[in-house]
Length: 492
Image (cartoon, rainbow, N blue to C red; front, side, top):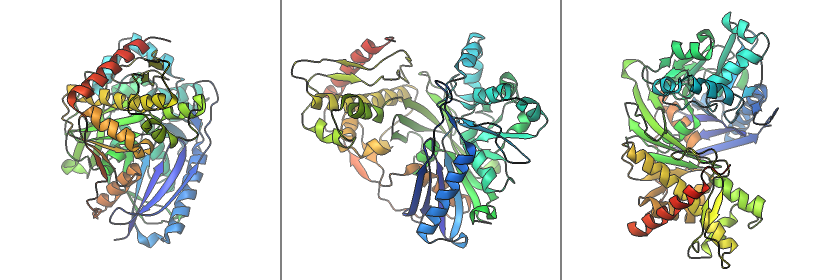
């Protein structure tokens, strides 16, 4: 069979990639789109712009690859998670901008529900913490604040969904309203155990179930594309949220296999097997994927933790302090000194995530002396990224995950010094993906499997970094890190 088209819709850009049967990239196209900030703490996207931008890069990638509809065996979709759209079923017109996962307007609603003692129910049912990050309160806000929307929703006139649902609707000319289990598991409306929408949660958040999409597997034929993008009849056979798609792209197929994506922040997911596993450190429990359909479907769950500031600390060194001209310069500067000179930098610029969960923590530098240089700060910044990831891995291991190596991708994973630090402090091998676009690759893998033509991928596992320091040295560094974290806590 032919190639696979991966649609990768992200928070700041839309991308389309054409993959060959062996997983190699034949073509890629990417365009950014406007971010909307109507009020402090609010973040929105125009769904029509997302679609037009995505359709544009699809056409560009296919043209660049010299591919026609008959050459495409399947389509896979991966997307920014939690962002929610509501649109008219008859016209396909959105009733409002999409509310983005970063948006914090519903924090008061979450606080009220927490005060009412509802967080344990939500946690047990969904595997998520009660936070405005997830889709449920965003959808409730649209229903209660956009005139006429609630009445129209209750009459069945409106459809709601995360970005994968919106793209699927547009790709099929309005014939299919569905989402996959990974995206559904990020809404705070989905029973993680039954893998179905939960009527009690929908009532709690005031969401009419009639507006929700059907839930499908991550890898199975869902629908055929319409003629409007030149891919009429091509089967859409893979859907997954971006971090779960990266888990697939990194081939974390067995329990204990973990991947970390280094971007502005870090998203670390570990495969925990066929049963959801609760965390004692407020890590998230989520669906990793569901392959196939019916009783034979294979479900994998994952545990997830997030580092709020990773690559962003390097951006701060560049834009805030001016000690480097480009992000790529940080490695050379940091490598120019043998160690941090006793400096520890806690990159808590927006608080600390799991396992610390301290929104009032702030960025902290300790150990400064007259001999401290920009190079020591640069090295301490990289070490701070690595230490945060170690904290996440240790929390996952305390929760029962048996992690033997860490598979990595994302922009900052190209920094060899950071990867060596990561292996040293973890005291575990770190394996950098040969294919850096693990998210799009995961969508392509799921889509190829969905039409019964698995990718015949090679065995190039990329670059492997082994620990080069002893356990005592690593433990000492982590001990000093935790002392600095304690000093950063509760500052704001």
